[in-house]
Length: 62
Image (cartoon, rainbow, N blue to C red):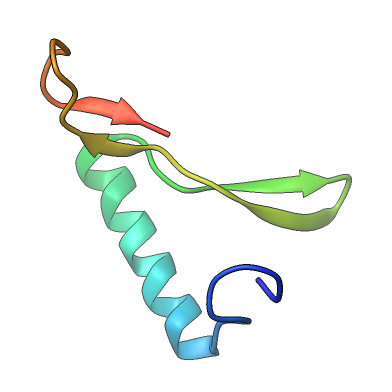
């Protein structure tokens, strides 16, 4: 996060993002995933609901 966005997350912000991710998994069945290199955390990847022309609603977008 030091190279993108607004820098490292505070503990409070990280906790809120975690709660949001858990809600998304519970409600939609997909969402935020951790990227690991061996045992080391290196980032996040996520799918989100979105509207795409011609796609069944809701669609999942990277």
